[in-house]
Amino acid sequence: MSSRTTPVDHELVRAAAEVARTRCRGDDHTMAAAGRAPDGRIVTAVNAYHFTGGPCAELVLIGTAAAQGIYELSTIVAVGDRERGVVPPCGRCRQVLLDYFPEVRVVVGAGERVRAVPVTELLPETYVWADHQIDTP
Image (cartoon, rainbow, N blue to C red; front, side, top):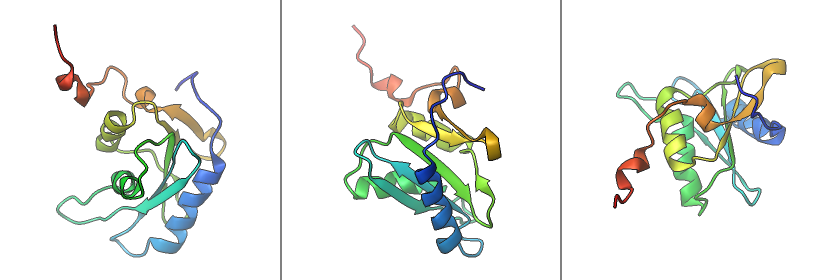
């Protein structure tokens, strides 16, 4: 997909997998996410499924990080329950991650193909929400 991959943060993947294994129970919580702050801290979260469209684990992670005073993430990963492994972000999460953290790396792929790529690689030719806030001369 990209020649701009970076080394995978395996500690982050393990953190998300542990949360998925121990905290995701039943249909309400089926995905876990972990993100790394630039200072090295790891924050985790789970999704909150609801038939009205509850938030994905990546979106819950953004709020959880902010509640802990973390406003930048360098890397993020989502992992499914029942040992499903790394799960790529949905389209909505890709856009939100780009808007909040345009430099974030996202862990994607499975098995030997797990890699970390810039979120911009997951949304080529994308709209950036902050574009509407740019002052024009």
